[in-house]
Image (cartoon, rainbow, N blue to C red; front, side, top):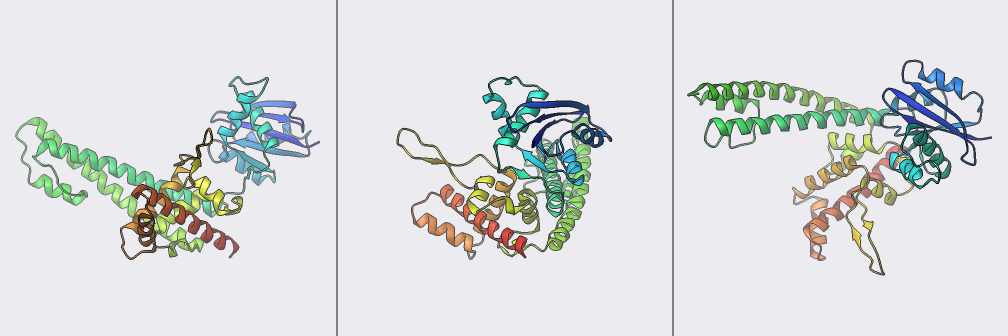
Length: 340
C-alpha cells in the first residue's frame, strides 16, 4: 500500500502523520527537532516501505528536514502552506488548527494534487538565492541608515545634505558644522557613528557584488545577455525560480512570478486585474529589469513600451506588458540554459 507521510515542521518540533490511499490516518508521530530527527523519522516509517513524504513549506521551516530526507534517498514533495490550509478548512472532520491536523492536511493535499514540486538537493539555484537575499538585505539596511542620517542632518543644519549620500559625503558635511549646544553635539556624534556604519555596509555590498558576479558567471547562464539584467537580477531570477522544468510553459511561469493578470469576472462581465499572487521577489526582479530598459531610449524594452502606449495603453499597463515580455524572455533563457 502506498503511504503518504505529511509533516508539519516547526523550529522546535515536527509532527508527522501517515495516511493511506483513501486518506485514512495510519500512524502519528511528534518529535523534537534535533540532530537525531532524521533517524527517528526513518525508524518510525519503517512499517511503510512504499512511502512518500510531503512537507509543508520545504523552502521555509521545513528546508533542512526536506534536504535530509532527500539525502537519505526519500521521495519528498513540497506542499504550499496555503494549499494545505485550504484542505484543512474544507475537511469535514478536522478543521481545528493544531499540529496533527496540519500534518494530516499536508498528507491529504499531497495525495490529491499530482503537480506538486518534487524537492531536489540544494544546488546552484539555492546558492544564488541566498547570495541575492543577502545582497538585498544589505542594500535595505544601508537605505535605512541613510534615511536616518538625512533626518539627523536636517535637524542639525538647514537643508541638511541635499544629495544622494555616501559615507564620504557625511564626513564633508560634519566638517562644516559647529555645534552650539549639547543636543547638537550629540546629533553630530550620531551622524559620525551612522556614517561609519554606512561605510562598513558599503564595503560589504561591494564584496557581495563580487561574490554574486563570480557565482553567476560560474552558473553559465545566458540571462545576463538580456539588456537590463545584470548579475544581481540574474541571481534573483535563477535563485527564486529553482528548477525551471517544473513550469510546463511560459504562461505557468508568468502566473508564478505574478506578471500574468488574474481573471475577476462575475455575471457575464469579464475583467482582469493585476495579480498580487506568486513569488514577489521574482516579480520585483522583473520590475527592476523593466525599469532599467525604460531608462535607455534605444533598448528593445523601451521600444516595446512606446508601442504599447501608441496602442492606447496607459503607462502602468504598458509597464505590466513589458514585465510579461521579460517574463517570457527569462523563461526561454532558463529553459535553454537547462537544456544546454
